[in-house]
Image (cartoon, rainbow, N blue to C red; front, side):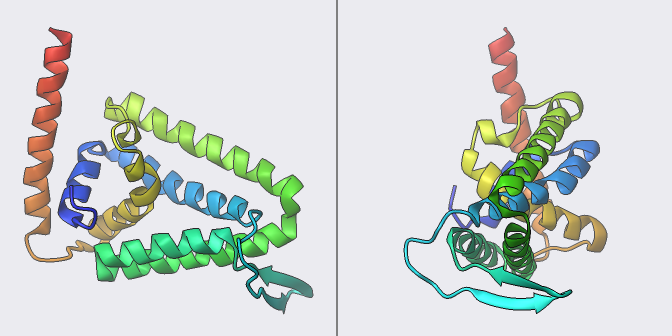
Length: 199
């Protein structure tokens, strides 16, 4: 699978997310996982000294940190733009928002409270997704077959699906038809493997 092959990545992801309830669960809970990860990574110092940006609002001082969370956000943002410029640019803006909001929240909460918030959100979000797969999708999540898919691409794909459902977004004409054929082939392959295991 080409690292920047949007069609193959989306087909792979879609094959694991065909149930509408499971899709909705992912739309609700994937971005909170990303956001709270960025929030927690604000407490990992950067290997080099970078200037921090300080601003005041609501009679408080806030700091936006150029640290590990910034580098993580940058990797995600650039990757998403490379996958698809239009949807990727929107995803990159959301990543940037998560970094800024995470930095502000980190400076407000401090580590002692922040890690507890992160733990609760992560647990609830992951449990909801496993329920989505176990109860509604009836197929193991993609992370068991491709962990990169779960952690790097999932935020982009739930946004992409939202754009597709609400606005009929396609990166090029015929994208959905092409991907649907790839999903059907992948699903058929999975069913055949499952049948062999059960026989």
